[in-house]
Image: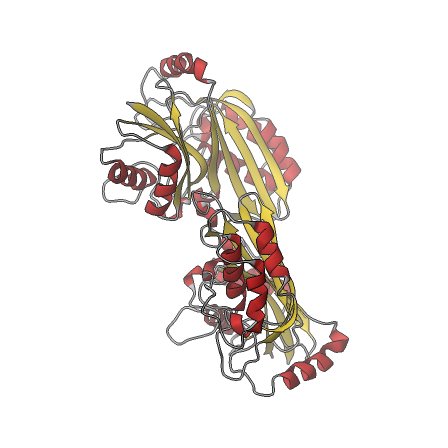
Length: 271
Length: 271
């Protein structure tokens, strides 16, 4: 058996999300079906971040095991002809058997893209750029900085049975690129709807409805806050996932599994 | 009466082209319908470049006359709520009565975008980026340079009754941006399918099937060349249109109309 690691990109618009659901169009379903047909064996993918409906990816990571003889580069080529245009396998490489796309991940990087243009998003960007009003980006930056570090992000999380809401937010800053506003959000892992709640909270500050201190104060809440408007899914993209060096994989897996004493059925993420 | 000049962007994917056709979804139809409803008077647009099905625009220009009282900025805002996401009016301003989006135009700028990535276009760019093989960009540049200047581009034009095929190609160069290849193509005007034929010819050179000299030699042909493969529509975008200063508009209109002694029923362009 050989373990393969895939880097995957998709336009989430016409998918009901990553996770396979019978009768619905999902990224996992499209990929597993294409791989199973091409390799003539059933393929089951394990993924770093189970993105929600409408969420995109530029650098999602997944793995699977195969008994087939694989030429990785050729398989990337063949998949490009086989897959629909809104999902691409960008790279395939052989990984150590200890590599686990979900449990070995040490950091996920998301981007959320807004535009302050008065006419809305450029048509060719409308599938992944969300219109907003003129905002005070310095206030958004000040509020976002208050959330950095290891905290209980319960206020920002939709509850899921057995999933912890304690996370380490390692990056949350705002870049201005012309009329685009891009949030860069990185953490060890994210609870459900967390990135979109972080963005919704910053927007309330940027539009002057709340203060940066209010944003920091949300960390004191022990359950999901009704004061936060969750930003729309289509502005969100999973950009990349970090893993430790191969030699540290076994150690990392043990550590992650231990942290999740009650296994969450649906993985660690969702953005 | 007041003449208004509009700058327009659209994702051409789900349009049958610019020009209104009964029962079909066209950019002109969407815009005229929205404007007519909002201004409560029939609106008819005159456009700089009548783009084909699937062709996009970042800076198309059109004009219309209205008897209504218009606040241009407010109208841009209101249109953003009224129009579908794949067409945007980016700017509206009052123009002199001599301004004619079609006859006053002195230059049209197109871009054509390819990717040499082995997995094809990034999913979020798949609507406007066309996959191609690894190419020799220097050969493409050499061939493209041979076409610059005032020539009869008959070899590159689908015939249209009464339309001249003599054009001045002012810019045709190739930019590499990572794995993207972007052709910048500017001329006083374009005949039907001209940009896509120029790109198709350059690709034949880039892939080593033809030489740069072959590309130059196409200018000697007096009718559409069967040796040229027309590149797909969805890689093409009309980026902007140049006009002379207001004081020279009347002169320019007279000049353009004279050049077209036999009126072409469908405008000057099409890319």
